[in-house]
Image (cartoon, helix red, strand yellow):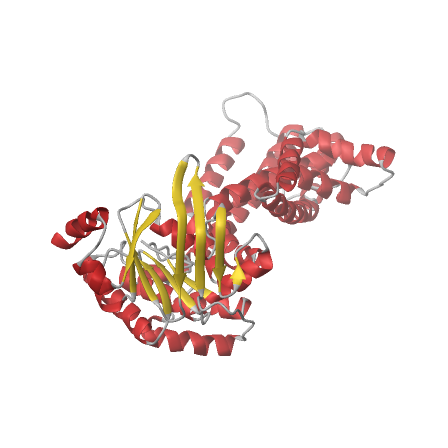
Length: 248
Length: 252
């Protein structure tokens, strides 16, 4: 599709919310298959940045290219990009009026034009991969938080995306449910999915990440492979953040 | 069900007891035990079909156009949003009775559109009511969490599919009580169409009053007719709400 070796490319991206500058001159490139973990204090712009990648937020200046297509106001190219980019939210955002199975088949049936039988086969395949095929006919509210988040991951996977975005996927979960979600994400990573993950789970980051990105006040302060990032961060802000987050 | 039966019983008791006045009731005009009374009863009840048909048609037109107007009011495009707002402001400020008269007598003169009494009634009621339906839909749609929009968009649904499969099914469940309210209201305001001559319940009562000179008995019976009709409708709406809430299990 494009000659660029990157599946996601942000070039000098900036964004304001009113007078608050959420993103300052962000540049970041992600190769196919790469796992990027983004961390930083709250309000540092990490969620805003990955939400810009599928245009849930509009950037004001700079360029964002996903899978060779530039993100613009053009509805058709935007929809094409969104089909290739899965998104997992902090608050799951499952459709409460639909069963688990219908949550999963909606996208494939409406967007990929599959018939119900095909879509259900795809859905059951991914429910098995997130290890809850037995919950297919329940409604979201009947599931635990961890199960809901795994359904949400499966819902994204049903679209067969080339890239998955995770926006603090375990922050709304009770501690005992965090691991079941992280396990699913690790499996996904091992299978070669390209992932951009905003999280505070540093153990997960150490095991999975190809590169770590540290953000503060809307800027990317440091980018490094995890080994270097955790043992020998170069900037002081990053050192302080890691000290706080790793001591508890 | 029992509160509704209770309401009916209290109403019936109050009305038939004669309260404390010296008025001597002449229920014979609609007595089911005399041939004359039976004829009158049948005459009154025969307006039921038009009342129900009028209200159902008007509410269908009104809900459909109300939904469309609410979508205009929520559009990103400023012009579309403006059209939606003007529609709501204009039509909710026109009194229904005036609207009925204007559609029936005014449209032929102004636009050369001549409608029968039934069509004119449906149009007038629907136009007025649709402004209220639009606001109800707007409230329902706006009450749906932004995350539902974002999740729909992130799996690539078009705007239409997002509304059709995700937002509206949830919004409609939430607004069923006010929608039921509007339908009840529509059944009652359909009586205004009697003024242009549609022989629905109120018109029938008016006609009988002129020949029988028993307005109090006849209008009391008319009240009971509307009461029974509306009790049935509200019962059906409760059933509908219960049925739809079975599949509506919210996360939490």
